[in-house]
Length: 255
Image (cartoon, rainbow, N blue to C red; front, side, top):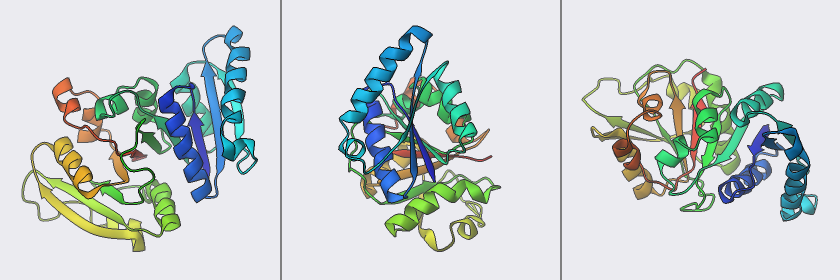
């Protein structure tokens, strides 16, 4: 397993790095840390800042984790995606800004761009976690067919390492005979947990309510070309503000 954590030295990036270190230990993974700088004169400054940041992290400074570190010139989101593809990264961990809302998760510029198009799963981490490294996992699923079993590689590894099940949530806008793809159980195998069918018209609000009520530690969603999640990337402020949560969000590409 390979984990990539881009950093810009901000507080939300530090929260993401703490989470990346947690999963590096949990999954016995290889950690990659990169900083993307805009122009060549910034390289020396970026390198100094990166070294100073790493020196302040005990797990790294004391040698428990030896990350692969790189500073790269270019456009941040493009370079992150290219780095992930080039190095066969299994999980990208990135931070959110500000108010811990879906708006800031999805409209955080670089995070938004990477989460929108990356073929690698992206774990988006709020700056202030509601419950630090809570192991309760929840998959919010739509009613579309699942076509790629390997999309579940990362959440299955996390569930196995924590010895937990992955609960399933589906928000029902109408009565459905088959509310979601039954092959999901074959994909999740012995890690499939409880199934919750919750009626409601405002999907984001219902997911928010459920994650807060159940104290979810990791919310998992699948990014599809025409799903409500993809549309959420472009909706207005009212819909965005409806999803206020401190829950880390793992975005799986349906590639």
